[in-house]
Image 1: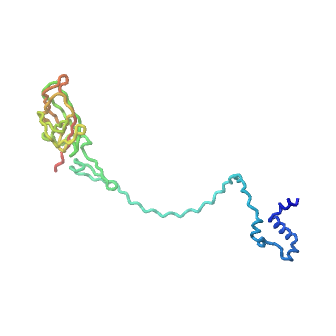
Image 2 (image 1 turned 30 degrees about the vertical axis):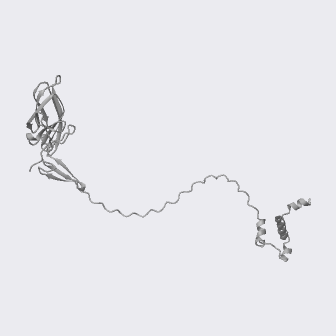
Image 3 (image 1 turned 90 degrees about the vertical axis):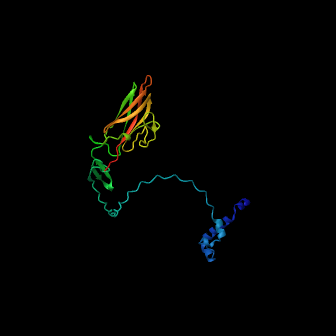
Length: 264
């Protein structure tokens, strides 16, 4: 039994017992200066042994319910007024000016309109937008042509201009262009040319010129001339020298005419 008691005796137990004894007999010990009123009176190494170890952390508790939303705060005071913006520039009204005839933008006269940022537009008299007008200078109109013949001899083909020219073209300004881009001069004579820079798919003509582009022919023919020239069109003469059995002779393609430059 005594050995079991000894097993329970430790330094901590003895120290705690002494503290208890001192507390219970405070008056007597005070007289002998052994009263302990603060942990500072205990030797730090002894006090450290008297402190128990921290226990394990407890489990996290369950989250509480969210609290109710708080009442809205008071309305803030109005902010200060911003500074006034700068005044914008005055707008400009559309102005118009009458144009005299033979003007670069309106050959037959009209009106010039000026809007904001000095942007200009034009309303021209006559051609090509009203009846009775003529093709403006250096403007181009295009079309297609074709004919067929069942006998040899001269054949006529009409090239009608939807917008007439001011004056008929001269003979030297009419051209028949072969698929290779060269000009047919008659009797199958070919010559280089610069008056017709386009193609049968995109016919073009230099100012003051008429260009007929050949896309294909059936049989043999010789171009005669554009002998009949009018403000509203041209008539070409094709001489058929040999027709193809069952097909005769045929030719077709496109054309372009460009009005000459204005002369003062």
